[in-house]
Image (cartoon, rainbow, N blue to C red):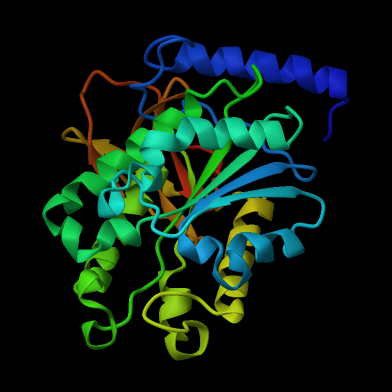
Length: 320
């Protein structure tokens, strides 16, 4: 059901206030929060979408340009640059460090949108963070990604709701035999990031797109060198992201929830696109896990389990 503009504004303010109350902290001090406690409604069209990427966001037109051709009723604002990382000064250049510059990216997007709030932020980074020169710092990549999510949600988004965030995994690197020395071991490091991106998406209530297998299975057809995509490759990425943004069907719920000896277990959802489960108590998320078993404190009551898919959709509750 769609709301009139006036009603939508009132509804948005109400939901934003509710989210702030449910944060660990307040509206002005939410930088350490780890997750949303409610699932915010998403717009279906007319969205302002900010894409944040590296060289694959611009080479051969880039996946954001392809995304715009798919999402004809939305406005895609592309902020991509070769060499960009999540949180490292690549080649000593702070201008390529997204964490250092995310505030300006968001401000530029709002300005370009003529001061309309940003509805969606798509993050496709991690390729340059996986270079050989950052091998000793690879354990910083995920904490940097989490900080980036928190920074985006702390942004004054025209005094309205923070944007929804979609995390996209990096594409595969080619084998070391075909990549430059600076990228040796890159594909191994990217593969290690994939399950970690999934866990971050689950815990921090982001949508999640794993493009790695989509590109890997057609690598010779859709990659023009060791990592940069062809137009066909960009189309694959854009289609996968568009599917996430446009999917509204909730997954099947889990079943057979049992709490015994401090462990909560359940039968997994039958939906194939589930990335994990949210455990709630009195409508507040207390755990988010990828498996179907978790240890809980005995005094917790009113427990329910929800399945969540990569699109950000949450199933109905399976109660204890």
